[in-house]
Length: 77
Picture 1: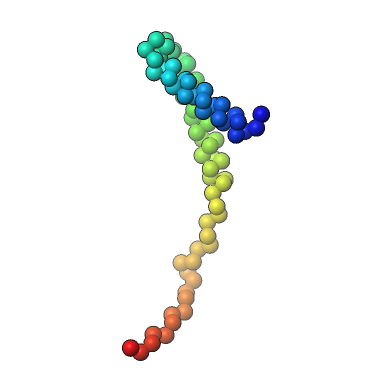
Picture 2: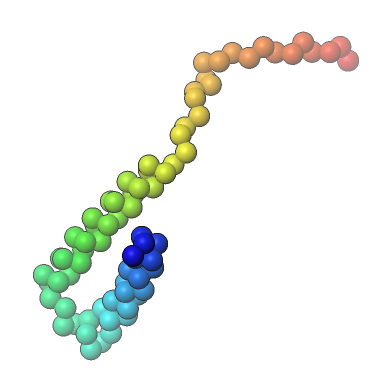
């Protein structure tokens, strides 16, 4: 299975889980341990995605603050 497909399936399952967590029948039955496990998994996923985004950022341009540019001579008006 390719990664893009796995991400799509994860998002779909996350939507279903969100609906179930909000439901008056199932939401109150979730245990503190279940919530902790879910929170840890989301934390790990969030950090991994942040690392991936950081790696995919374009490189910063070289600093030009110390570069002096020649000024064009002003023309008489």
